[in-house]
Length: 211
Image (spheres, rainbow, N blue to C red):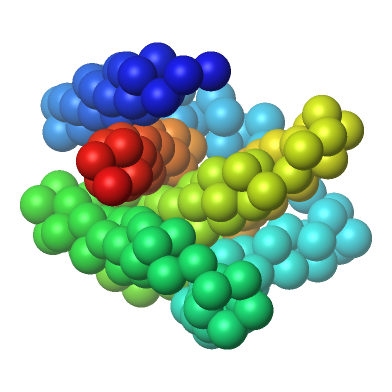
């Protein structure tokens, strides 16, 4: 795939995700997504069992601050010390840090309270969009992008996509299962982070092209 097509695709994905997030945000603000949230919550929490609760707590832990920081430091070390990929390191820091700042800003804008019907774990702060979902999509999304470029086999790339997607999905679902986020929080977080990641990749590719 040529670079021009890659740039066009990244810009299109960013624009599409931004529109999707805007639509979810309007529905959340107008309280017109309650039925959607309730149906998904009823289904996900209807699966509750001691074993599944343990699994969901694990994925929520993996998507929280300290594990994300540890993973980020490990990637930082690999990119800087082992692979000597300075520009890829800048992209990684930009995506992960920017996503966290964007999430904090959006939460302050929308001021959505968390669900309280059936909460298995405690959580503070505003609900929309999901910080765990945004962090997971940004972190595992940018890792997948960076590793994809260094994997030559279709099997390796397939495993990379499946693993990254599974981590993002399970972290998002865990927040619904544990009762600390609405499904629309998770969906909004994925779309916001998807837009941020795609536009960041677009700028990175443009920079690479000019060099």
